[in-house]
Length: 139
Image (cartoon, rainbow, N blue to C red; front, top):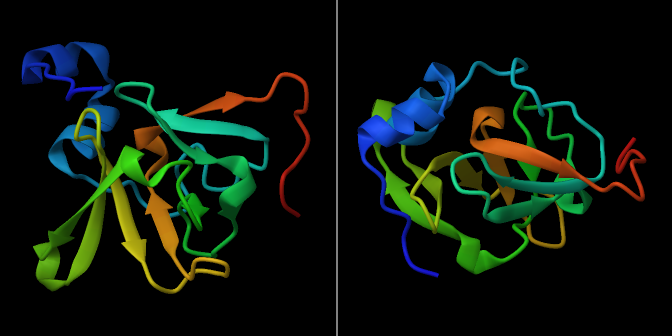
């Protein structure tokens, strides 16, 4: 699947101002405010901009950071990593491979089996719940 190529005007028409700021302008929502930071429903988290499957609720965990956190993506090819030196920090930004939407950052302080914490803005995601099994996935 090739890159999704839309103009900024198209993105602005399709996304809310907050979604646009976060996904297209590399913004960050305040901790503990996003729609999914404390969601425990089972399902698949897809890219808000293009619908690419990114994370499963099975890999979601409560990291205490105030953003949805996952220890692994559904498929490593769905996410690209870029060095991020903004705000006087050294971090690894994660973006959707298909549409380049800013998702958040990945850190090396997560749980096993990966040791990674994919810290993602809720505004970058949409949860497609499992219709058959809408149980909580973690306590």
